[in-house]
Length: 455
Image 1: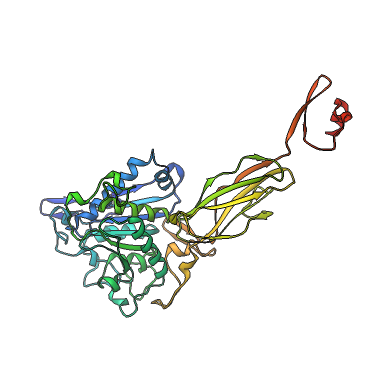
Image 2 (image 1 turned 45 degrees about the horizontal axis):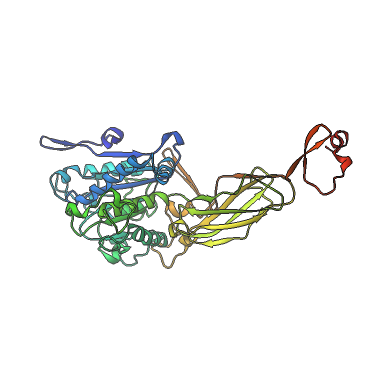
């Protein structure tokens, strides 16, 4: 946990005798490395929209409390960098007002299709400094006042055609955010901000998505390579300050629509989903035995995770220790959903007759539908980190100390099956010997001299 003031040198928020800082929470397991996909969650751009601050705070608490006991949470913390800004506008939050200490709307203060001011607020500068130093794959800015999920385009520069180059990815994410968020107070509608809400100047959502590549509408004085995130504004509740009884409780997070569900558990679920799909991975749900006989049939089951659609998946294996690049056998291709639709893939494999140690991996190609476009504005290919990192082998991007590389195929851990003939133990004279089961042994073969010659 650190402040933007200490990390980036932005000034304190000062009004009279009051002084505030912009706190940032970073949650990860450093012992598992640093080069991980990053996600960002922001509450309190508008100080009077208290419910967003509640969602951000309790997300951090949930991750910390459940790391030791929840395998999925442990996986996310071990394999992701999760950043949370609970209160982007601390003065407004304390004083129950939308604006900052100078009466400026922080969510109109960013350098993309900008308004009459840019970075006039400390909070917008702080979040810009954080955003520009990272490669956030998915981002949420929590608000209140209605109930919906909105995404680009939401600016005046793109009101004539509201489809962004990453429209399919935005739509797919919005659909599953709504579904996984659950039925409390109704499933969230989702769509482009310019279609279902209204356009505005200088908002964070379009800035965080497009300021690095839609340079015609970005301010040249504030360049950044970090603004390629699929960024959603979630309007959590119709009330900006809903009653405590509607917020929910801890037991509601894994109980959508049930006891203790509410606005906060609903949005924790959404945040966990977006954290999961920041990078594809394969979860082996039913492992084969480590040893088997030649010609035996073994069963393998798996889920494709960290993605929303599976274009193809298969098991590939052989005697080479690198089955990703060098394999002899591959199973039939399967396709369909992912673990986010509770889809599980199964394969029964008849092992080869040749003995040896066989190395296996499971391959998956995911989310290829996000490359589809209708009539985007501008007329360019998808630009988001999310799409390119899972569809383009030749793509890579670096920003400060962060690097992402594209992979069209994703692989499970490598696992092995030792394939050897069964053995039997027999007495030859006074000696106990172990031999492979074969049909062509005779009694004379079992003499110590004959067996030693045979081996």
